[in-house]
Amino acid sequence: MTFTLPDLPYDRTALAPHMSAETLEFHHGKHHQAYVNALNDLTKGTDLAGKSLDDIVKATYGKEDRQAIFNNAGQHWNHILFWQCMKPKGGGAMPGELERRIKADLGGVDKFKEEFVKAGVGQFGSGWCWLVVNKGKLAVTKTPNGVNPLALGQHGLLGCDVWEHSYYLDYRNRRPDYIKAFLEHLVNWEFVAQRLAKA
Ligand code: MN3
Image 1 (tube, helix red, strand yellow):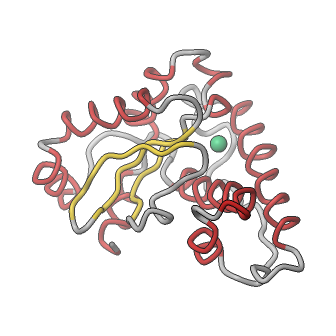
Image 2 (image 1 turned 30 degrees about the vertical axis):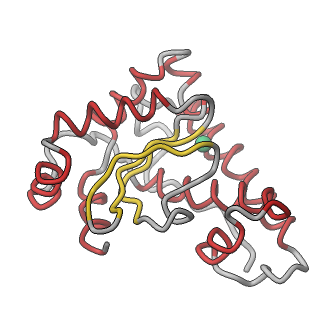
């Protein structure tokens, strides 16, 4: 399979001021495109050519000789999810079933948000913070670089990119402010609830 860059599900200007058009132009148009190009180049002519993205992520995770393929496949998977996790005028109230599960498994919405910000801020260097289903329960996690819930046998519901390219133009060094704005103004909770329903 030749992988392609998916279109953003909204206009590049639609997430401002919380995520600027300039950030999306570089993050989607340059960074994500580079992962797609590298993944295509690295898998060309190998036994992984023609495999699905999920299969490539699972087949290459933790394999020393396939680290470069995993990094780019993982990042392609992560960004496909990330763009869908946001929408213009996001944040706000979440669908009832999602809120109920967050209360039951994570001690409430405020507690969840605190843990999510803490995970993202606590990820030293580049990486991601997540809301996942792990062994039937919701959990907040963090991963380095391109590692993702799929590689770890979990079901990812919500992912936030905490690489500097995701926030530096808009927030400079203020990663906590970026993650808080992501939760309060950008997250598409209906999308997260749909993923939970399929978990
Ligand atoms: Mn990124």
